[in-house]
Image (tube, rainbow, N blue to C red; front, side, top):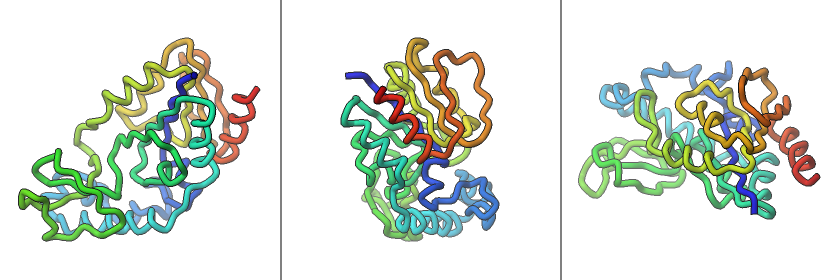
Length: 227
C-alpha cells in the first residue's frame, strides 16, 4: 500500500470558518503577536495569553470539518496516510483521520509551564490563571510559540522522507522550519500543492500545482489519484 503524507496549513481550516492569523479580520487584528504568542508574553502577561487562546478554542469548538478534511480522511481507504498539520485545531481528527501530527501543538491540550512532558487533554474548557499541573505549576496552552523549538519536526522529516505521494494543502510555505518539508520528499514521489494563491516553488521534481481552495482542489486530486 502506497504511503501518502498530507501536509496542511491554515488554508484548509479557513473554509470551516477558522480565521487565519493573516486575515484582515482575523484574531491577530485584536492582539499584537508579540503580546500573545511568545515565551516573553507568557512571562509578562499570562492572563492576556490565556484570554487569546481561550478565544481561539471557542472558535475551534464552533467549527466543523469541511469537505477537504473529510476527503483527506477518506484517503485512508486506499492508502497508508499520515497527516502533518501546522494547525492547532482538531478538525482532521473530527473528520476521521487516524494519524495526525501537530507541529505547532493543539488547542485542546494544556501542559505544565515548567515540565514539557506533563500534557493534559482539557478539551474546550478554558485554561485560567491558577489552573496547575500535578507538580503545582501553572498550565499553559500546548502550543509552540514564536521563538520556541518545534519538537515534532524530526518526526515530520521522517514521515515525509518515506512518502510515495506528498500532498500540501493550504499553506504559504513561508513558515519555517515546516516550509522546508517539501525538500525532504523523495525525488521519485509524486507531489501536489493545493492553494489558490500563487506560491513560488522551484527545483522540486514531480510537482503538480492545483490553484484552487482546499475543498475543490482535493476533489480534483481525488479524481486524479483514482485514475
